[in-house]
Length: 147
Length: 153
Image (tube, chains in turn green, yellow):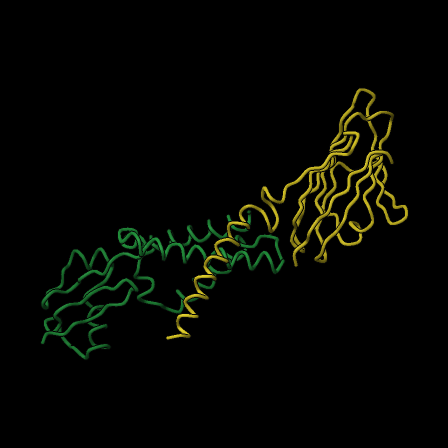
C-alpha cells in the first residue's frame, strides 16, 4: 500500500509543479535545465523507494507510475476538458503577421523566440512573413508562412 | 493486420494485469496493507502476535507481541530459529533483561511488576532472503503461536 501511495503522490506532485512551471521550461532546454531535471529525478527517487531495496518494491513503483499514466490517458480521451487542464491547448501567438502581445507575455514568449523558430524551421526573416505562429502543447512553436 | 490485432489484444490483457497488480498492491499483497496485516492468538489467549503476512526483502517488517495474564517476576519470549536465521532485528523495544540463545532459538527475558498483567514487545525485522518462513513465538514455554511469512525478492 505504502509503495503505491508513494508513487501516486509523487506523480501528482510532479505533474502539478511542472504544470505551474509552464511550457517554457521545455521550449528552452539549457544545460542548467538538464541538470535541474537530473537533480529532480535524484530527489524523487528517495521519496519513491524510501528504504526499500527489493525488486518487487521497485517493480510495483514502476507499474504504479505507468498505470497512473494510462489512467490519465484514458480520462483525457473521455473528458476533453481534463486534457485542456492537464496538457493545455495550443495557443496562437502571431496572426497574419501581427504579434498578439498579451498572449505572448502571458506565455512568457518574446517576439525573438518566435523569430528564432521561424528562421530555424521555415527560413523566414520577418514577422510579417508569418501567417500563424502557434505555441503547441509540447512547448514548441510551429510557424505557418504567409502564402 | 493479424499481428497488429494480436498486439492490441496483448496490450489490453496487459492493462488489466497492470491495473489489478496496482489494486492488489494497494490492498497489501506485496507488504503493508489490509491483506498483509494479520494477528494470531495462542490457544489459551495469553499471547497475541500482530505480524505482516507479506514482506519485501531488505525492508522492514513489524512484529508486535502482546502478552496478557502475566504472573511472577519474569516472563520469557522465545522466537524460533528459522526466523532468526533469515531476519535481522532492526529494533527491539523495550530492551530485555537478558537475551540468549538456546538450540537455535532467541530467548528474551523481561521483568514484570507485581500489579502488572499485560505487556507488549515491539520488533522490527528485516528479511535477508526471499521465500516462505514459518515462525513460532512462545511465551513462558506454555503459550505458543505459529504463523508463516512470505518474503518477496
